[in-house]
Length: 109
Image (cartoon, rainbow, N blue to C red; front, side, top):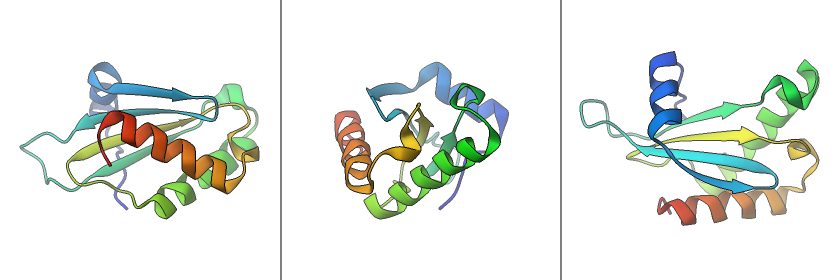
């Protein structure tokens, strides 16, 4: 799974990406620029409002595993998954369903 690391690309995703909100997470998606490899990339974000480093890292780990179970990364798309309060406590089935719901709403899957 390839991740987005360049700040310029993260800013582009936040500025122009379509959003879908769920109580457990927020998903942003933007088609991959044509000048770049068409393979999909994923970004995992857990802000400091969630709590300490342990909580933030756990939230990102849970999101990463959910993306693997759902079948990410998605060719032709840059996708950001943003953890919300309680993301690490959501059951795996509910989190997978939330990710699928968001991706279907965005037209990715």
